[in-house]
Image (cartoon, rainbow, N blue to C red):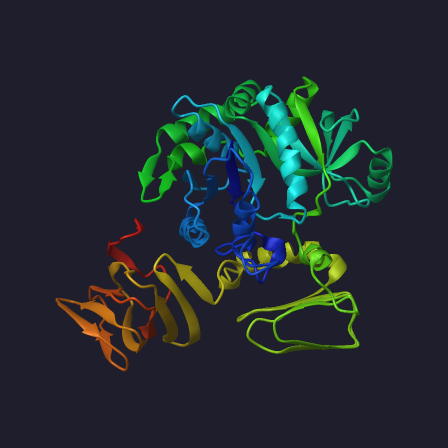
Length: 469
């Protein structure tokens, strides 16, 4: 059985902490490790598991690789989506990869942003589902509903066993209908987790969405291996229709009685919004969940998160307050589903806060934008030991580097030399240059940029260890 980890979401409803270039699955929302890391480690101790296949956005590839390395996981593959096409094409890529050598493994499909508290119960449910998958069934996991939730789709089933026949998949209901679903005892929240043979999924895809199958097949057949990644054919994948696995496969397959649901009561949460994170967080006697440097007074039932600054609240209730280096969100806890509208407005205005944090991660480390003004920008660069920035030049800006700690191997035009603490170099506009950390400790540099245009797209890469262009 191969875990297939879906890691392509943007997490826009959890802005400003989650952003498209560093979304929630890579963040430590519920403990000290990221949600991606939690998803993989949740399978620890389950026998007969192969290494995972992770499917992610191309721009997130180095974060995925690094976070798996941190927990000593060597993936079977990291499949890169050049564009998002929803879950059906993503799972199809994993299925084609799994059977590329004639093997027909079972695929345990898991989103990378779920919380499951009762791991042993989850493992028991996988065992039940595995028997059904081996028999050729398409299996989904249905969450035992705790209340009438209008934010989830539902699964209607018949039977009373450990696995049950799926009758139909239902859209998100209004409150009255959700209450009827919960009272029936035959309806479950749709978790978005699945288990099936790779061949069973491919055959169903051929039957119900041959257009998706043919296009994904072309994309996978044109794939190339790039470092630790499998990079599918861009043009073919971009032409693939976008659809969820529910619409494309599970709903029509349910009509042919080939879909079963395994009920799961394991303290599951999809952490889709700040209110859902509040609901699973540890709270004080006033119902407040806090993270970071927070002081509350006469505050109740609120989620408050501070990053780098003190946040204080007085006389408020049912609020979400999230502070990051460059943004502050204040929202009614019952209206947090609309946070994504803020992200849409930021994107429409080409605001960087929609995509990037002030601290931007790169395969070599990260940079933190400290200050900027008319014609200048100041950044703090941290380069990992043994890492190297691309050999590059700029058309519109000059740079001045000052080493704060560590040692830097610098190429500046035709000269290559070492810099240590308190030493510096100036790189004129148009000069070819590179920066490398040859040491065993992180290299920290202050970079002062000056020029008429300071955008990140003013980089002409001549050589790069990470395959970027």
